[in-house]
Image (cartoon, rainbow, N blue to C red; front, side):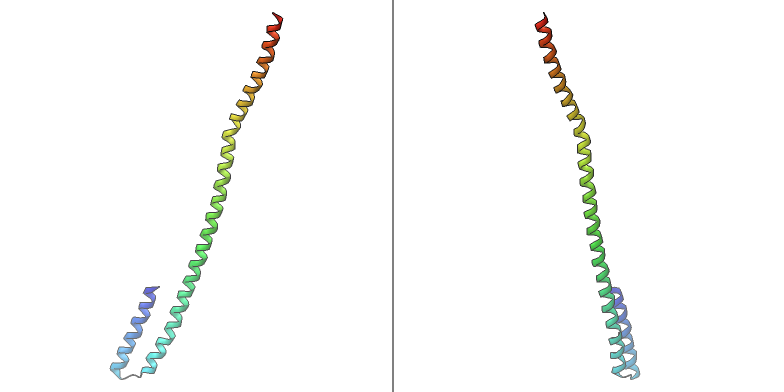
Length: 109
């Protein structure tokens, strides 16, 4: 953006210098300057809007990425816990079965 502004400022200053050396009027110089300044402001506003839109899109992408990451973490946690829970359940059932059978065997003898 600064380069564009400098380009226009250099061109207007060159025109002013060449106009003043040739005896040109200052109204022509002022009109040229007035034409370029709104153009530069418009470009700056457009760039600012594009930058704000890009920041908004980035924020939305980060939010979506966070949601996906949380879901993956939750599912992987479940996948890790499921075998452990199954093992604990199996051990509990086995201990119950052993206690029942041990008592039964103990009473038989």
